[in-house]
Each structure stands twice: as C-alpha cells, then as structure tokens.
Length: 130
Picture 1 (spheres, rainbow, N blue to C red):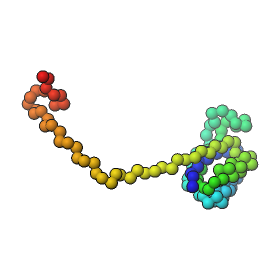
Picture 2: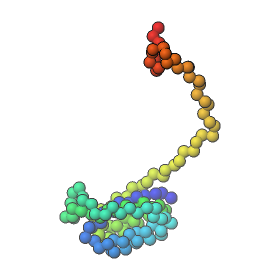
Picture 3: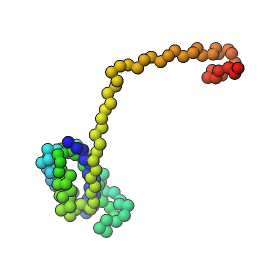
Picture 4: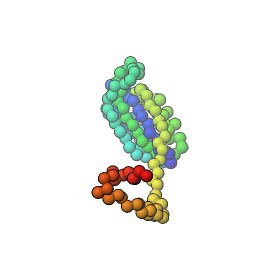
C-alpha cells in the first residue's frame, strides 16, 4: 500500500462541527479502500499568501494515510464536491526504510605512528621538516 499526504485548506468561516463531520467522512473513504489514517495534523487558521475566493485566511489540515489503488481519486472527488474546501493538494509520501548494519564488523584501523614527545618543541600535529 502507498502512503499519501493531503493538505486541505478549509474556509475559515466554516463551523467546526461541519469540518469535523467532513473529515470523518474522508476517514470513511480511506477505510473503504483498505487503508487507514496514519496522522492528522490541524494547524488552525493561518494567513494565506494570496486571497482565495476573497478569503485571506484558511484553516489548514494535513492527512497522512495509506490505501489501495483509487483512494486518492475518491478522496479528491469528495473534496471537489464539498464547498467548504478552498484548496487541496495530495502528494505521495516516500516510505522510510531503515538500513540494517552490515553482518561483518569492519577491520580494526591500523595502528597510528606514535605522537612526538611533548618536550621536542614542535607542534603535536606536524611532522618535523627535513
């Protein structure tokens, strides 16, 4: 299953209960495609960079979810129908893979040359000039 993230900008004048009902509906859409909501992040009302439908603020919500083929199309179809969504954008989230350590241990480093003695008057990190 693929992971997706959808950013939704809601009308700031939309009542909170209506927004929550719609988000619950979107969660139902995801579950119909054998997926699940992995994370929902509400940022609240933020100022827009430019006005959208004569609104200068929007309520930001981010969804991270997984699902079978067709989940994005159905989710975006519902967003197009809902009049409280100003904008939305969906992107695919790359799956994070953890690299396992190599089976063999690296050979120990070769022994370094002994450091010059402290009383020689030369800096410790430099070799004597020929």
